[in-house]
Image (cartoon, rainbow, N blue to C red; front, side, top):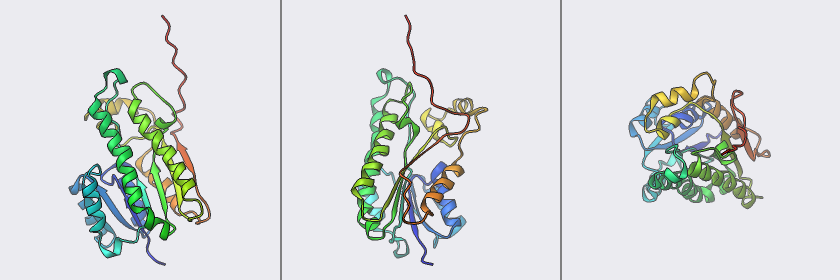
Length: 250
């Protein structure tokens, strides 16, 4: 069987790192991209350079992204699956108190970088009848205080995914949006500027989604027969459900 290749962004931790592990264990080659070269190198050391190609750059840097793509070793140039996992949330303040620079960074990573890499790989994904899995969030469907731009970026990801699906109709390319709820990774540490106490408090007693749960979900989607497409999948821990609407009295 011909070995397939996946490009997984945000591969240095959380969903991305777990997805690299899962796909390599299933015999795939993986292009693992992210900012932290030391963490990417650990993946190479663990699995070998013939299975994992590490490429370290800031995904907001379009020139670096294109250079990384142009420099792929020949064994990794046939890309069958793009997992757009790189993303982040910054800040928990209401919009009127939020940091505009954080808003712009979330848009740059969660939206602009995602569409740039997708656009770059689309011709090859069409040629190989490949697949795209975009990691969105329930925040794109359910607003909450402090969600503001993060939720807006994930709503974009969800709808961009479905519009890609319509544009790619007839090409054989499968396109999926995965929308996780509460998941315990480095997500809250990044959002709070490294506040471990805030992260521990958020997840205490919740039995949240794990990175492995999402990696397994991505693998299931990618390994389905080619005539099946999962349009979107919303995943929450059993302990989480949609909150009630706010009512202000006074």
